[in-house]
Image (tube, rainbow, N blue to C red; front, side, top):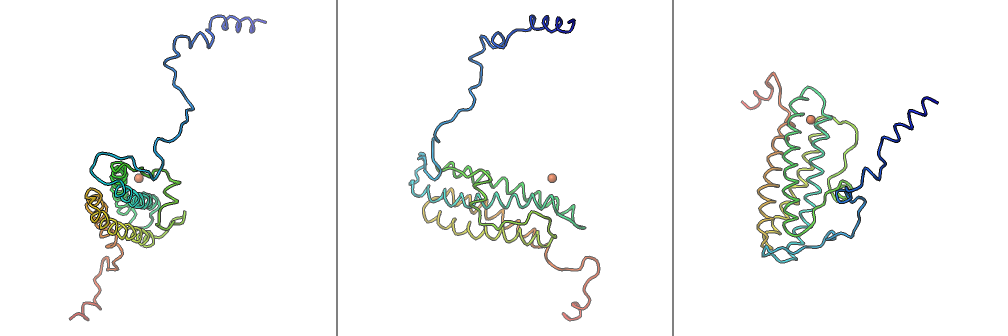
Length: 217
Ligand SMILES: [Fe+2]
């Protein structure tokens, strides 16, 4: 009985939920809202940038392909950053992360270029997985040469499509898109290819190859 008496006392002192919320209705967040999209994917919201909507639509579509592949390549770098193994672990762990961060900057540049054209950037993993043309890697860990080969092949896919799209943007008079593709996408990818490819040159680490030296003489 003594315990019940104590609970009753507490109930009398504590205010009800209604009393607690009274007067604060205007500050309450309105949750669970839903409405139609303000712009469906694939449509152009015309902006005053002196570019024909058809050109904007073509560039946005091309850039979304590059965006999906760049997001995939970025994530491939993070996968390899985590999963790399062997005596070059530390060096490659850092290099893969550096390239990941540079690809991440490209992602933002490409996505915001699409929005600047009045288009809509892809964003979610589901859409990226459906759009990218970079082959899906296995979930498990791979040897370093396989990791690097996989990255180089992904870079080449991006570079090939970026060049074609850059030419198309130039022909269409879309200089801004051409500039993003050449100055940002192509130059960054080419530089990263160099840094990676040098790791697959089979040269001696400690002792020079005497057999080759005498053959050259
Ligand atoms: Fe990390």
